[in-house]
Image 1: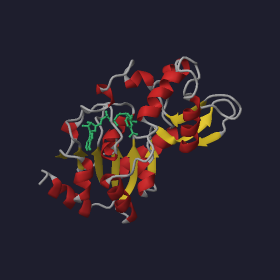
Image 2: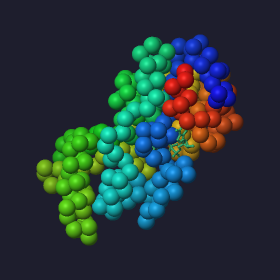
Image 3: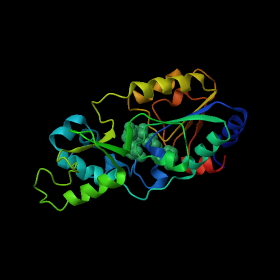
Length: 251
Ligand code: NAD
């Protein structure tokens, strides 16, 4: 029996205005690696740390290197929602959960059926040409990355997806050094400040400004469901240490 699970269950039953705030750990059970777990991206071998590769400067200067990493680690086809994504969608359908606020860019909450999903860091499902603005979905970008991988690896456009107009396509993902969408932030603050229960899961809570949003919660049911300790454990009313998919499948 996972410690704290009974209390979590009881609080979910009692609450009607739950907000979920999550991160990469929500999708590890779907096969997408996070950054900071032992088998996460920080512990894999790359020429640069993920935070450097996923920065605006790096994207502009070393686009081909960026897309090599992006294709291997973030453009993952076939990942399916796990029990955590599915339970959150179910709680929303029941009218108990009002919003999912996520730092993830994988689109799995929507695939699970969640409607009100606030993507703080954008999504790999949306992409635009940097010159003419033309929209490309996940599949189209994946195909263009694959086509560009036929180039010589030394070519500056190796693996770089190109628009029909010839310019580079950029994912609608908030890179390090880029600002978050004001509208998404305002809505997130509104949901969190009105929530009667805030469940935070699968996040190390070290990426700002996203992690700072949880301070807008003023209730007494702040729950952290995470495998390892986080930067905010001392603020929690309840800590459930476990795999989020396993925990949520028992709610
Ligand atoms: P993080 O890697 O910093 O932290 C993940 C946390 O989740 C860790 O504390 C880890 O112990 C925990 N965790 C891992 N698997 C878990 C599980 N099954 N159940 C419960 N907890 C689990 O992730 P972060 O805080 O989201 O910050 C990383 C940044 O990287 C975010 O901005 C995010 O946008 C981005 N990112 C996104 C994805 C994705 O879209 N799936 C993947 C990797 C990174």
